[in-house]
Image 1 (cartoon, rainbow, N blue to C red):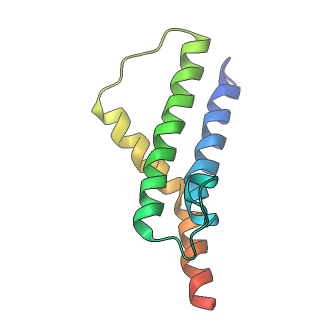
Image 2 (image 1 turned 30 degrees about the vertical axis):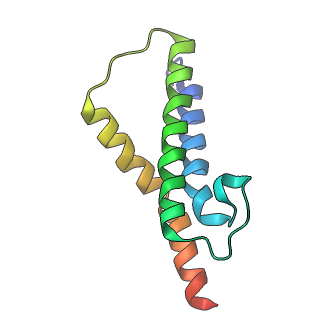
Image 3 (image 1 turned 60 degrees about the vertical axis):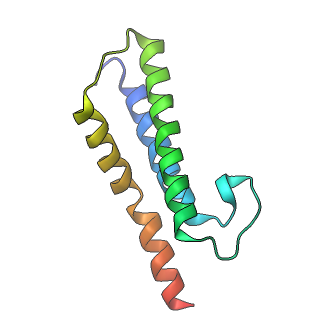
Length: 101
């Protein structure tokens, strides 16, 4: 394993949790007022904010272990696709749970 594999796994864990949070709770941004049911635009906004926060965590860890590397748009596009893929379990849980009820 690489010297910084713990940081990589930490970012992936944070991303997985953050990607699913908008789908598993009914509060706005975790601490805001409870909405029953929370509308999809709120969930998408939360998902975008969580992606940004995860990006900041990753950048912070990268700066802590060494010099931050400049990234092109391809990096951010691939990161957004990965974040949406990590959100899939929460999305499926939300949709299937709603259909059962």
